[in-house]
Image (tube, rainbow, N blue to C red; front, top):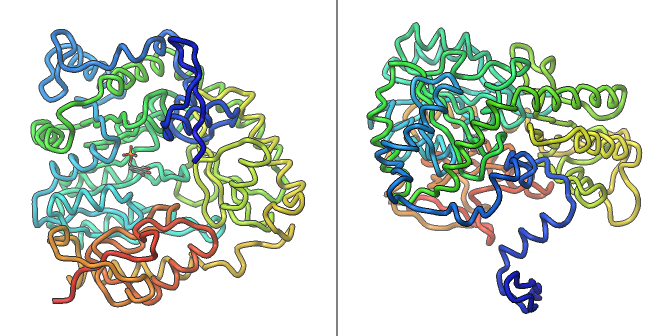
Length: 509
Ligand SMILES: Cc1ncc(COP(=O)(O)O)c(C=O)c1O
């Protein structure tokens, strides 16, 4: 690989640094690409310059005056109290390994080994792994599905009611809200049902920490009655990657148990830069969040109408009955352009210098935050309009047939995916598979095509949408092998399959 010459700031001489990660980051940030992805500070534009000057001098450790995350008594205690007050929590904790770490601690604190956790089958992989580590088994609910967008939609209050009756031993219910696509289940009703049954509601609000700061957005989990809520500040607030909050909203949860597990799951050397930005993101949003989000929502509103009557369909609060939608999450269905979401994402990057957060077979998802300007939102919609006007500009670009629904002939997520998940859920409930003891079981690698009938040791998930198709302890079915092959063939990524096409399965006894 050719080395990139970087100019030394100190002696102004130019020489090669063999620093591929640094070079890649520098090159992306200098490329002029408009980022519609996390982190939510958008290359720093959402952070006042004063906070960014001489940032290297803030990379400190536990010394007198900086406090200790694992026993906060000084500035970290004060900053966590400020966060609790800003987000409406009884008490809040800073987490330095993302919502992943917060969810792991929340699950272990709310459930004991051998118990079950009620959750949706489209939960994030960190929830599946959290159950594994805590010795907790899943009681999965099958998520709904939107045929129009070809995405899973989440769970309804009725689903939760049935699950609670069916799993009386489960001490807690964990829901994901909002989804990656911005869909929001009816959390108020769900909270009411869960509490009526005397259980604890954990909300994976990784994508929704901004909800608190503007009344035009869906209600936040804490406002709606969550007992524990975990938020990735880095996804939609002006915070650095890995920064997350864990909030406790009620007396149903013992903060000491949560702290016990947070201490186990987190590093003993937490980054003070990440923690300082959790504090600063809270302050920025408290001071300017409402105004900045009003500006963002105004820009999106002003531009959405430009797509009316076009071949592009925007996900909104009318798309799925019973579900609200976060208007800052711009999810665009591109099927009628005659291309996949993967192809559209590539075209947007190469032709318009717009980088989306993710794409799937049918959609492209853009994260917009308080850090976006009316100009960046305008550029995104200009690009979408031009894309639908000339989806194929010639050789080398996505091959397409304008007007033809590209989802025809692609793997049918609606039928196959839902049917597969349903089967896995049934077999888990019948006790034929589950999460327990999988971590320590002996395993071997086999080619995906030879894996039908074997038990997976890992999460296997087409990413996006990131929903586990196979969870640890579940049987890899012949249909799952075909489905994964189809998704990979259409350009999708599949987590859990190695580069050599192998998967990790339990050894036969
Ligand atoms: C729904 C959901 N929950 C949890 C996580 C984990 O969050 P983090 O990356 O902050 O650890 C993600 C990450 O994308 C997610 O999409």
